[in-house]
Length: 367
Image (cartoon, rainbow, N blue to C red; front, side, top):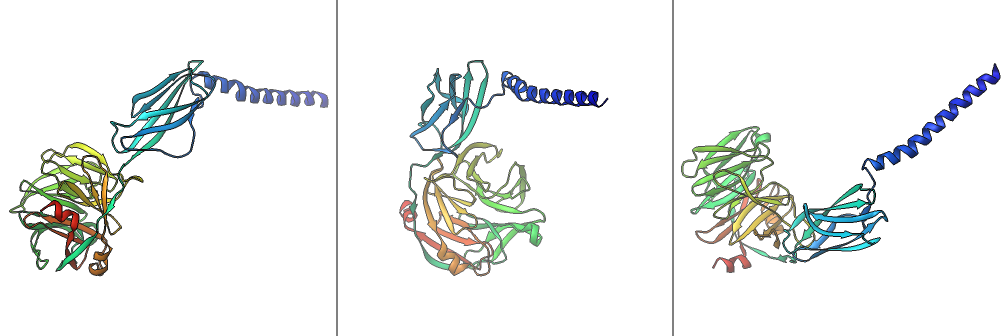
């Protein structure tokens, strides 16, 4: 009886071991035959790939012996292929027609058993320009209502308009006309919490005000502040300006969206990059003399952007403004250019001061 139990236990152990061997050997073979192989071709090196705008992307590709053909796609366009590739191949792709920003590289390798592996990696196309540093000079200090949590600032026909946030925290958000000389609110329209106002601009007599996470843009008549319409959109709203044809919007990332003023549909998107990588947290915007000026949230820096490409042309360090005008306020946020007299103004959230400033490069451009 004892001997019989022994053989039963031994048989069970042999059955378990056999099952283990089958699962670890034959099941793997089946998985490979079903087309779920490991990558047959891999890119040598760690991290994201990068290249310079208008130049060439180059990387080393390591191929398994079973690879019969390898194909390289850039944003779903076939850009390189090789039949019977060597164990290592140098892939070179022209970036002549590729825009600035983050793109996708996809490697598809076809093996001798007709299985296919796919490998994807990001590639960053960096600007070919080293940004300049544009100094600014304070020309004049003016009063600013420190109860205003500034999110948008702009001029239209010599009149200054300001939009605020803080609806979630203090009970209201507003947009209105401001007296430049004394900072007083001349007229305004308010929205109750939880609406949180963001960037503002005036285009063809219509005053646009974005909201942060409410997915709606309010449009008012500039002369009366009467509500004209509400436009729904997806994503977050941060800064807003226009180039005379399109509205230009930021959402806190490195992207700028060019929208149709009537439908608010996106007509173009650019990614803002300098020679090192993406420039994120783009906040309040102003279009001046062919360039987009943007506050970088949480910093005292303003970035100057070429709108056709997204290249960073220059950085403006505004530490001096925060030092002399922040008071108990929050971050720098607010750029407004008055084309009626070619004067540039800057302020921040809850700042008691607004500055008239001079930037030499800009002054020469608008003369």
